Length: 103
Image 1 (cartoon, helix red, strand yellow):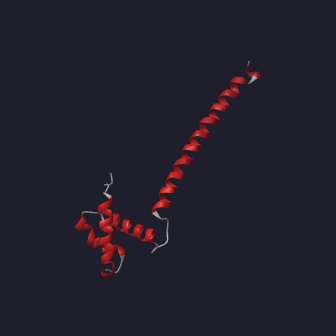
Image 2 (cartoon, rainbow, N blue to C red):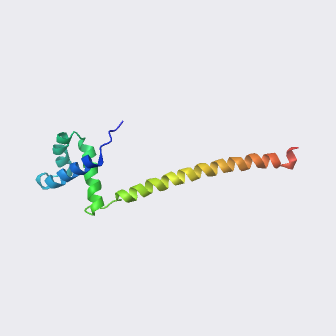
Image 3 (cartoon, helix red, strand yellow):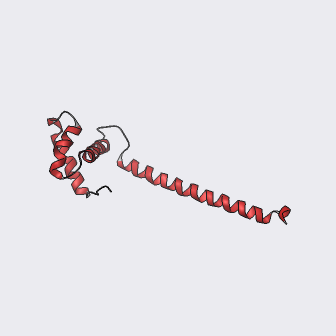
């Protein structure tokens, strides 16, 4: 089960990496150096940094708000599909009950 880090820890970690980014050849190298000091996995830290860069407009990609909206819309679509399946099953059931040929 993945750990949940508080927002303050994430923000501080991202800020530390961004401040030291010029000292390293890549984002991953910076994350690999900073992560042990904060007791955070280097890949988790790299993903946080990349998402922070996307949110600030430095990199292309979906922002955090867009990802939240996408997640909510996918959940809504899933719920609506489930409701449609239930309604289809109910209409088939009641259509059979009302069919005059079955009596």
